Image (tube, rainbow, N blue to C red; front, side, top):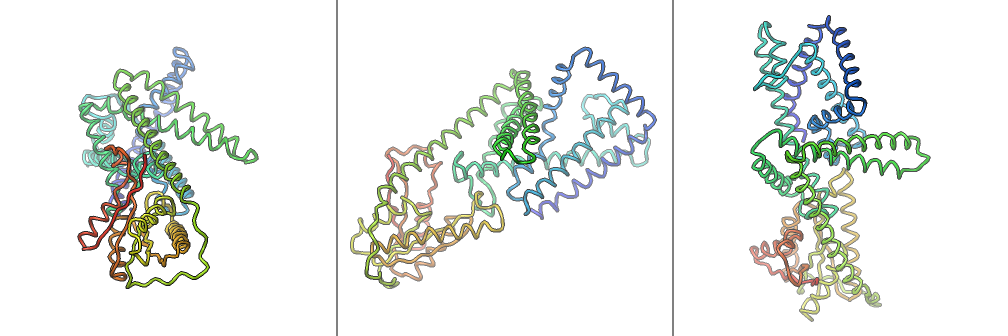
Length: 486
């Protein structure tokens, strides 16, 4: 990330320097008109209050505010990227937010003042900033080059900002995948930490939006603004709920509740006004697409909860384990036939598969090796201590499997690896185990459904089958045992 920022840094530096020069030069160039401008603004504001009233002025403000919602891309990117900010994460996140908000407010306010001071009006085929820079640099040696560089830096900055969806979108999907709102494979950090599934999905959605709107910026802004303020409203409501549930004796509780209540009302009102105003200009499509996506997310989560509940019942049936034997269990003998069982966390699927090995192949295997791959996904990728915590949980789960084997009098040991690609790590670990246990047969459990639908392959990973194919290539035998779900 540091390398990426280093590459992009010149764009931000050029943008900041050129706009600082333009704002300062433009204000000092017409410093004598500042008093007159203040009077005009005051008169215009009073006239607006007289003709529109406070309610009308507020609606006008919120309408303009909604059209400028795209300027919050940077703040939104920081909030979405909080999990990868360096520790202390909260302090650095607040500092970054403050810097972005300050620079955004300063630049926007400075440009608006220049529009008024220099009496800038729209010109067909040119942006307001292009018209402004053309006026500011007239008659100045090298002015045309300065104007070109300034506008070029704005365009380059917009190109960089446009990539925020392709970097933060997959990260949001990954966070949702950890909580089972979207397919869990979106949480994977494999392929050199590239969220390729998320990027592919975002790219397809972008193509669909461009095809539907024909590249019409007005319609694209409508699509963007409505979804932005849905996000803002929900975020502020979540913060309001969090503040309201905080201890009543907390010193900042009342201030935070007031702040987020005002934010919810502001963003919610803008959302409603924008949706009503732009309903026939693409707003209805946004509501249908976004609403359908929300419905799909709820359906996916319900499916995962059903599968999890079924596996929990399976575990409950297997919970009655025999007591520990009085005689010590023999040590593992690598020369004897060995069943190597790929397991995740300690639970029903692993216990069920362990029992099925000895049920399907009675009297054959003398040892069991429980192997596990601790996956560093988006749910774990949260700080320097996260890998240690993941390792501790993995060892704890494998220790439970060792206890399970002892209760059945089976010699057992464990092996595990930590990585971001479960299939690759499992393949490497299996090859090492096969060298240590030459008479090993590999086993894995897989959830199967009575009538498997196409979507179930998307929602449930095919880890067992993928590892099986790779082990066949190495000349090893792997058996996938089913765990039925009705």
